[in-house]
Image (cartoon, rainbow, N blue to C red; front, top):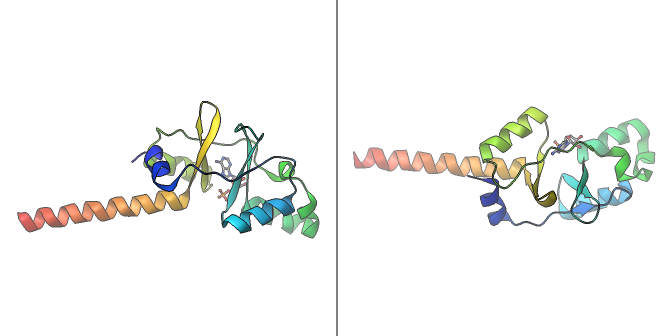
Length: 143
Ligand code: AMP
């Protein structure tokens, strides 16, 4: 299964913020949309960074409530790993495992078009495993 197939199923909507937005507003957006990370863009689809709940928790531990006054640009990871629609679920799993993160923005022609989370990947892997088990069961039953 490819990233394209996942996006076709779950949709291409992505929650984004600009780098100058406050961490307080980023926390509100994470809570409102029930997500764990937000892709930071220039407002025209060019990726500038990614900020996840982990970045916010780390800064809260260091700076306390002052962390909320920072801008997203202060906390975000600027060196963002991305994938394309042609990546396989397997490749995405490898990139996430190697990079130790759970979110992977999808780019087309240098612009953000979607996000794949570890939850999306696990869901498809479980579905694939169930389908394989079903096929093996019916093969054995027909033998
Ligand atoms: P996560 O596991 O996705 O919540 O993120 C863990 C850490 O990795 C945080 O510091 C994020 O800013 C960073 N991160 C998340 N996704 C990516 C990505 N696609 N590329 C680079 N860093 C990322």
